Length: 193
Image (cartoon, rainbow, N blue to C red; front, top):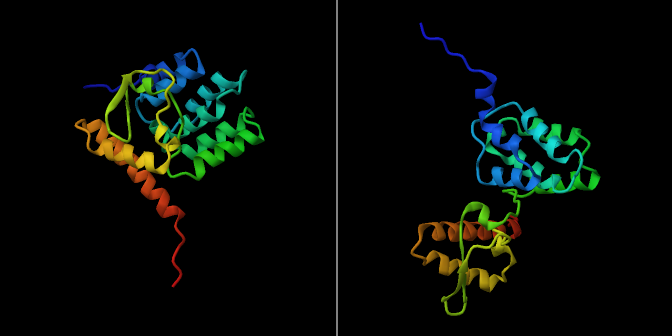
């Protein structure tokens, strides 16, 4: 007869890297790059990570809370996780307001992080001609740069991305385009009958 035995180490396997993170930035990088495995309804795992990294220093705590609350591992217990993080007392009233604004109102919560965490390089384009004017990897270049472009420049960047020969670039361009269309739809007044 075969026995099925799961010990505590097997259950914690998806968290060993997060628990070993030496800094808040390292924790963020691991979550952003999807180094968390498994699924869990044990929200206390994430609350303990939050407390471990922010009990002495609340710097970056809202970003950590957003990342942990949106991590797939705990998506079945998000409400309990939010309550647990709020109950730690680490977030002051302003931070709690920011957490609510970032988690509850946008369709997709965002956390800025260096592009290099994803292992992607960047290409700078002259938007008027579409020619490549630079290429490299920058440790501090944020991923969501499309939000900082003017509408005309963003549309030109989207068009260049859609015409790219690389599937990954086309996917990003489509995502940015879809986000902009959704934003326009949400901002449009609702027609009255």
